[in-house]
Length: 274
Image (tube, rainbow, N blue to C red; front, side, top):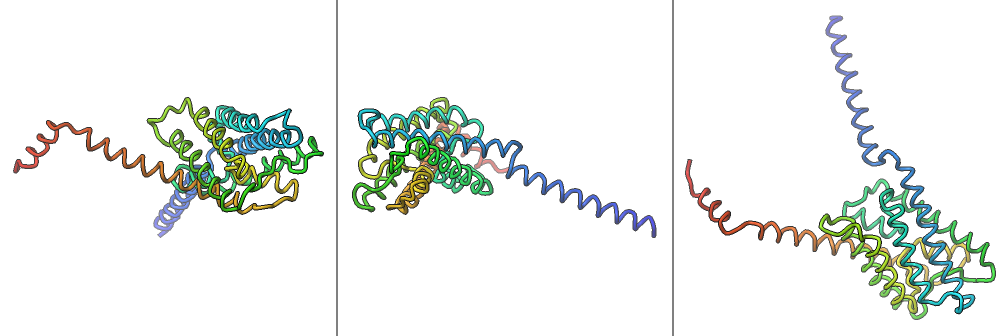
């Protein structure tokens, strides 16, 4: 009896140990080693993104001779390009809650990590905005985005421009056939172009954190819902559109990769009875 009890205890111990190992493995897959480093990289990346993007827009509002609207758009695109090369290999350089959500919906990013990334992005954006507030006290807006026309016009332009940016981001981030060495240039250029196009209508945010940071620092929430709904909707549409195209193209590659000879051989083999 003692031997049976010991064997049962041993089996229970092994079972408990295996369960613990499985749980540890699952947690490591959800939160890989160095995950805190990834989160911190998102804080820094979003801080610099908002500091440069909102800062140049604020300086242009103070004096157009210092930074033109074109200069502000170029600065926004360049900072995105630089940060992708700086932290892209660490955190993926999302720097945008809409991007994190979109990547999660297409299974390119774990859902468990999304809240941490969004918290990091908002922290960086708000910190940058209050820093600008201390440096540029005369400016009332601090580069805050708000609709110049109607809310619907701003909403549509935010959806379209964010769609463009995330469509390109999904391509270079998820497709092995894409030239990833030029990812920063591609995404940064899309941000620059979108900012030039959307600037006169919505301010060209394409990023809820980019809008929320200055809005909180200045207590200005005009049309704030536009910059929550628009970028998130555009990001989801952009990510899913590329995934659909990618899957369709993959199926076509498989069908065209079979030569007529290989198809004939397959047909001949299926006709052989063993």
